[in-house]
Length: 436
Image 1 (tube, rainbow, N blue to C red):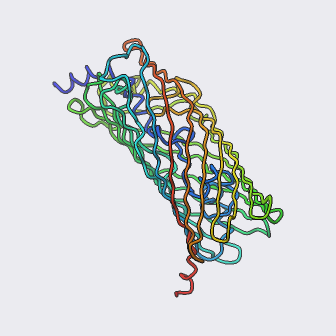
Image 2 (image 1 turned 120 degrees about the vertical axis):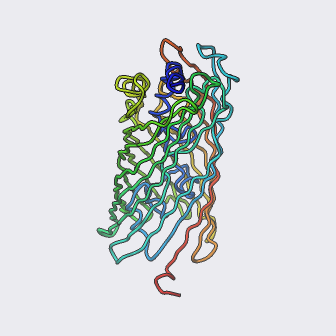
Image 3 (image 1 turned 180 degrees about the vertical axis):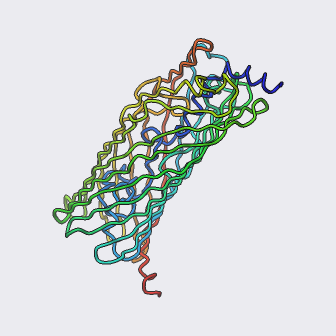
């Protein structure tokens, strides 16, 4: 009885906070440092060019953006990448209804350091057909602000993990023409925490997971020597997360579900030799984030008024009104010697979040500029080592979160930047075929 009464007291002060946390299961990657919450660091080589040329082949990791790139490789090959993401994101409360309600105006640095892995494998079946597998984490990362800061009722801690497995086939249609397609199998696990009732209140927690399925498809054209044009698509992924919601010491776990559709991504890239040892690269990418006008979470067997039908969770979706995301990059690659290749690139990324209202405290995303350098060293006939570094200049932005007439409006200023350091290795494994 005491717990039930306590839950009802908490529900009024944190209703929208819970709605934001629950509905934003897929939005906990506030420091993903790509448009919305899809990190780009899936290839060390292409990070070195700010992802210019990413769908135009050249290395095995190009298959993430364009599965047809897999068809360029004979024998057995592998590629792996590890990216250390060092974000710096701070939200500072401006005078508002919530100003002074917590222990600090500042969230502190909400961007937890993270390591993002990616790996790829190819096996040539015959003269025409190549099989491959990609293993990636295409959505997610973590955020963790000061425990009792002003915005703790909207976000205290967020964590999301995805595992995406993409078995792929590429077919050599004719000289200079390769097509490819694959199946995406993705698992997602999410945990969101926030303060209940006040910035100093107990922690409410949302947990959920699910498996989702989609596809990839693409074409790679090489009309002349030294020219590659690639077009690839990663399809939408429908995910229905199921899990629990509870408030520590006040509400026992209750079942929840949330239907979320992750957007399709279309990438067009060019790789063009412009002089001996010099190659120009470019990419244009579109992400259909506008398919997310709102997010809605439903609760089963919940206390009436907390998250039942018409309640703050079941009846009050989180309005996003995101736009489509766009990414434009250009880069250059220089074969300095037979063993050493140097590269550099820059990019402009238009965030799908263009309004202060759509910029939640879990995902304070905004437009950014990428600046990158990289290098590859051919250690042996079988092994090549890759390194890359990027700095992201993120535009300062505002967030405005309306908590309803009972609580007021939260307003804040967001400052962000990031450094990314990546290392990787590419290997030819043809000895597996010979048994030597």
